Image (cartoon, rainbow, N blue to C red):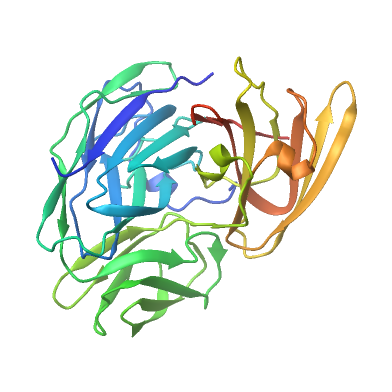
Length: 381
C-alpha cells in the first residue's frame, strides 16, 4: 500500500522502451529528508499557453503524492494538459480541474519520481486569459505544509523555496508539440504549435534535425535527423527579440468520447512513459457508501494502430466477458470498467488487457459522491 501525501501549490494573485538519457541524470537513491521545490519563472502573453514547471533543488525519491493547485481564474481559464516525469518512466496519476482548483494524485511504484533535478517532475499546460493585462505579475509558490512519502514510508515536508513569477507579456508561446510521444524515425515531421513565432525564430533541441522552418506565426516544423523518442524532450524556441520559451514534450492524447459517469468523465489520467502489451487490473470494492467506481484509461503512443482486447476473469467463474477496442496513435479512452463490457463486474474481477503494440494504462477509482480520485497500480502478466 502506497501512502499519500499533500502538496499545496498556490498559483494566484495574492513504455517498456529505452528512456532518453535516463542513465545520465543526477540521482540520489537514499531516503528523503525534506525537499525544496522550485517553481520556475514564466513570461507568456495574454491568450497564450504557459507550461508551469516544478522541479526539485536536490533529488529526493517520491513514491506517492497529492498536489492541490489553485489556478487563479483571473489569469487562467483552461488546463490543456498535465504531465509527471520520472527517469524510469513509472510515475503516473489522475487529476481533476474544478472551479479553478487542480488536484493531482500520483504514484511512482519504483520510487524514481523526484530523483533528478534537471527535469521538472510536474508540468502543467494552462491557457492565459485573452483579457489578461500585459505587465501584470503573479506569484507561483509552493505551500509550506506540503509533504511527500518515499518508498520507506517516510513522510517528509517540502521546504518552501523562493516563489516563481508569471509575467503577462512577451511574444512566443508554445501550445503543444506534435507528436509529443512515441519513437519516430529519421525524416519524420515534428510540429511545434503555438503563437507569436517570428519568421526568424530559432529552435534548440537535444536531438538532431535535418531542417527547421517557421511556416506561420502559429507553427514551426522540424524534420528529424535521427530516430528519436519524443517523450520527455526539451525544446527551446527563441524569437529575434530574445523572447524564449522552454517546453517539455509529452503525449497529450485525444479523448475518444467520454464516460457516462461524471466523476470519471471529469477526471484526467496522467499516463506513465512505461508501456505494456499485457497488463492487468481489477474491479475494486464499491466502498462503505457504495459510491466508488473503478476506471481504466488507455492511450496509444505507438505510430501503429493499437488493437486492444479486454478479458474479464474470476478464479471461480473463469472468463465472464470480453471486449475489443481500437486506438490510433495519439488517441486515449477512459471508461468505467463496466462500460467497456456493457455488464456489471463483481468486485475482485480481474481485467486483462492485451494489445498488438505497447500501450499506456492508468487505473483509478473515483468516488461519485465526493469526487475523490485514487490511482491504482496495474501489473503486467
